[in-house]
Amino acid sequence: MTKNVKSEFDFLVKDILEDEHFLETKKDLHHGTSKYEHSLRVARLSYKLSKIFKADSKIATRAGLLHDFFFGTRKEKPENSYLRHPVTAANNAKKYFNVSDVEAEAIKTHMFHQVLLKKVFPFVNRKEKASIKEFKPKSKEGWIICASDLLVSVIECERFQFTYAANVLLLLILNIVLFKN
Ligand SMILES: [Fe+2]
Ligand SMILES: [Fe+2]
Image (cartoon, rainbow, N blue to C red):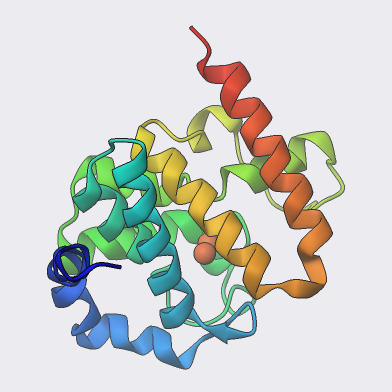
């Protein structure tokens, strides 16, 4: 990052990174790293993609940072589960950082790739339910966060690289199909 870009990014995330509740995410293991580090990587990539795709950098960066803002691991509580944690994170982001509806929606839809995967392969996460309509990103920033989370996860989860690469491809194809005018 250049100096100006870095200072804009730092300005956008400073209050969240210093918040005592967000600092709790340092304790949670996520993809073999801390949830704090994972979220920061997703925020950095979302910020860069927002510049490339002319999206709102504030929404993409802050919602990217808060996309996994839940406490504990995904297996600890039903509301932290694979497909429900985005709703929990959106509610926490509203509660602690008063995020806008657009930001909350972008957080809520960040696992859309997995919702699609479940529709194609119903045996994946059999006990969970999630509708495509409810969890499809509704904004450019929402798509950016969804893609950033997936790409960062590919790098973090080396052992799942093939699955994640297939998911990225699926997401890109569906994005083109769903958004062609
Ligand atoms: Fe997540
Ligand atoms: Fe994530």
